[in-house]
Structures are given as C-alpha cells and as structure tokens.
Length: 230
Ligand code: ADP
Ligand code: MG
Image: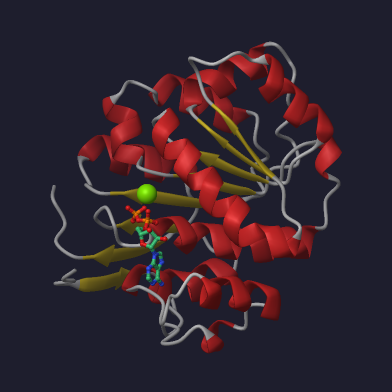
C-alpha cells in the first residue's frame, strides 16, 4: 500500500493517532483489534478517528483497501456507548452501502469487532426475503447496514424508524451515485434527524459527489489519502 498524499481541509484538525493505545478506545475494543493481528491504525484510521470522535462530519477520499470500514465503525461504537439508546426504538448508527456483497462485509466487521462491546447489527439488502430482515429490526439493533433500495422499501412499509439515527455513514458514495441511488439516498436522509454526525467515504471526488456532500454534511473535515481522481 502506498499513500502518496495526505491533505486536510477544515478548522483545527486534531493530530492523528499514531497507535491503537493513543485512541483511548475501551479495553474490550483494543483486545479485538489486537486479536485481529493489527499492529497500528492505517493512515485513514489514524487521521479520521480523532476527528470522528469529536463528533464532526467527515468527507474521506481514499482508495479501496485502506481500512475505511473500521475507520467509521469503531468511532460508531464509541458513539453508541455515549448515546445509550434503546435499540428496540430503532438503530442509532446507519451505514448505506452500494451492494449486498459490500454491505455483508461491513456487517461481518461490525459483528466481529462489536461482539465484546455487545453491539448488535443487521444488514438489509435486496434480492432476499424481507421477513428475516424485518424480524431483526423488530428485535432491535444498534447498527443497520443497508443498500439504499431495500432500506427505502422497508421505510415505505413503515417497518423501521430512523428517528434515533445520529451517526450516518455513506460508504462508497461515488459508487452509490453511479448506480443511480441518489433519489433513494435523499429520501432516506430525510427520515434521519438533522442533529446527527455524517461521514462520507468515496474513492473519487467528482462534481455529483461534492454536491451531495455539500447538501448532507455540515462543515465537514476533508481527509484525502492518496491521489484524488476528479
Ligand atoms: P476499504 O473499505 O478502505 O476498502 P477495508 O475496511 O475493507 O478497506 O479494509 C481492508 C482490509 O484491511 C480488511 O481485511 C481489514 O480487516 C483490514 N484492516 C483494517 N484495519 C487494519 C489495520 N489497522 N491493520 C491491518 N489491517 C487492517
Ligand atoms: Mg469499504
């Protein structure tokens, strides 16, 4: 992995965490990271964790394989601990992802790293029966990872409430827009309270992505790792 360039834009950006110990993550979480065999945060994690932990909005532009998933999930776990919402009233953390495959991978990471913190997560995607997904929602989950199409269907059925969501992640935003999910994303975000933290991850930074970032994020810190394709 090579990281050619690292740029910040934003007010008073905190210094990066150079080690896992510097994060102040609770011991059960540090144990999971240690058990996974990771020796230090990836550049995107080192840079974005301190910003995310200050509850600030982030736009991160970084290539695949840079460790973005834990980049937003672990601060999401800390956010959950701070909120202490009742998951039966709806999720607190919502992650939107373009495909079933990617959404499932995110859920796997959330389950693996969240287990010892007793964090629950479910995944909502199309091409599969709704029944089991609705059952998980009814049982109550802290984190929902969803593709925009299926989540929108479930919202239209009024079978999920997003009014407890206060940590919203748009993963692979450029890909979601390429796949034509913009109308669904905008509808979903209308159901999420405005008082929230929003984190957007994208591999490229074209005009459409800038536009949706400008509409959905508030005073974000921009983190670029590697070359930025326009
Ligand atoms: P991205 O979403 O940026 O494409 P992922 O979040 O899927 O990348 O991470 C790629 C791989 O790197 C995954 O297998 C993940 O478990 C691993 N990984 C994440 N963080 C670290 C770390 N700090 N050290 C080593 N490997 C890591
Ligand atoms: Mg990813």
